[in-house]
Amino acid sequence: MVLRSVGFLFSIVVACSGSIDIEKYLKTCNRNSPDVNDCLVDAIQNGITAMAGGIKDIGVPPVDPYHQKEQKIEYKNNQIQAKMVTKDILVLGLKESTVRDARLRVDDDSFHLEVDMFSPAVSLSGRYEGSGSYNDLNVVAHGTFVTNMTDLVYTWKLDGKPETINNEVYMKIKSFYMRPDVSNMQVYLTNESPETKELTALGVKIVNENWRLLYKELLPIVQANWDKIGVRVANKIFLKTPFNRLFPNTS
Image 1 (cartoon, one colour):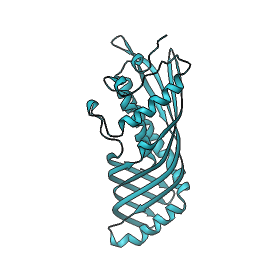
Image 2 (tube, rainbow, N blue to C red):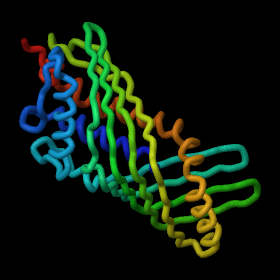
Image 3 (cartoon, one colour):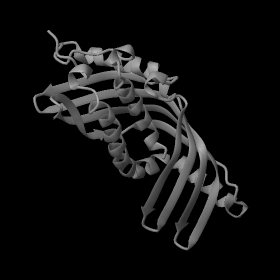
Image 4 (tube, rainbow, N blue to C red):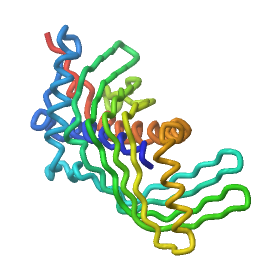
């Protein structure tokens, strides 16, 4: 749940670039220009700013705060099992992100884009329902949560293949990869189940003292979700807007 929040930022820029009139919201870049990477840095940075309050013209809601209706996660490791459903999630801090670099590679049969990002702070909050077990010990809890992360460094990697639709060439995204590094993460949890309040308080203490280990354990699970979400969101744009409009090839 925590890790996937960074993936929302990817949706911001992709959604912005896929508007009916993309030049209104996003700077376009000549894909064969020697300065295309510098152009992409400015274009994506401007896209993040444009999307902060949402864009009604293309039906995109505000992204800071970003609202997620529901999210589920399941974790198993030997004797430890846990399930959690989070609802009414708010993500804050995405509009302060900085695009550090971008690299585009395009040829006749492939597309590859990398974008280096930095987010100084991202905060998530909402409600949760969860259950967990360790050997014969079972815990059921529900309440509110807040997760604060600082100094997130990550790179988006998108790969695609051209596809012709009605005599127009589009780019179909096949994969999306991201692995954020986080400087610090702290979790705050309330529990409205009196029987397990002490156990959840102990669990939160252990998580905050060992968050790096938990983060590493959860990465493969969340990265699989990121790939599905990133590919789905990107293709809503790349398969709707001809490639030459997204990345013109002018002399």
